[in-house]
Length: 386
Image (cartoon, helix red, strand yellow):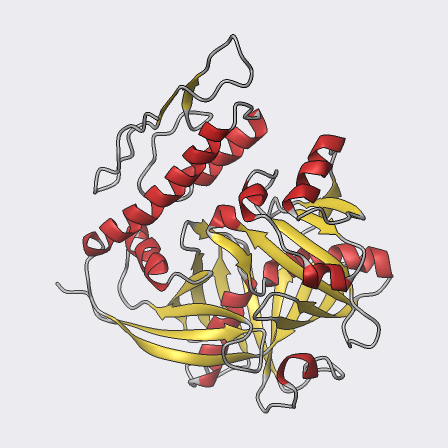
């Protein structure tokens, strides 16, 4: 039996203006779809996150999030986009929605107004009508890292020589939190994305104190090329870690935050330290709607395979240019690629590649790299030998 078309909306989150904030595709599922199809659709949209809603009860939904590369456990802006769609189109009869996710039960609440002072003027230049949505998320605690001087130098180099005030690591997201001297330093940052890929952790959250008179407490940006997103325009989940960090540094629990990406985004945040929860508040704007036709996932597999192939070749190229591959980096690549196609069961070795080197020279290039066969439907390459 043919699958029903899937209704979708594209929503710009954490903004009150179209084409700003962070876009997310919100798809409503009436039929079961396998993970290959879900991932292939995310590749087709090719934006930072595509989310899928399945109704359980009238105001209770199952929610999943996919980047163009893999499924993630938590995504703030796509949750805001999903809630905005449900509220805006009258698809729920309550001001509170519950989502069952890989991060547990999350709630979204419709609220009429919050105290953002004049912060939104930075983005839109005027007040806009509309409602706010409050997301109730778990705190992502930040911890000290035992970084050696060479790692700090590597991270600074990836951020184009930026001065670093502090470095932490998020407990849940496995991201680095890198604090720079000022909000201006955050805005002016021009990272070297190829170098960011080589840094420890999943991605790099950069943050600094906002300029006086801006109406904000801190600025941030988030670089995550390992997830297929060079720069996330506005990342709600990153602010679950930033709230934890700045709460301790500034001695407060309420913040106005600005993500200083080219698209920009505004978040109002409350840190409930006692219950280890973060309330993220923001607006959203619907910019597109349509239908995905009832196409079987095999029609999408070739496009997805090419995307994955490009990622593999990029990582392979990096490895062949470098004779020193740390166990940590190999382990992270293995974890990254193992999740890049959830249902393909990539038969990767522990360090992702079997590599034989010229033992007589530590600077010798990689001689032979064999990528173990991937069980994708399209038979994505059995071996790459430079």
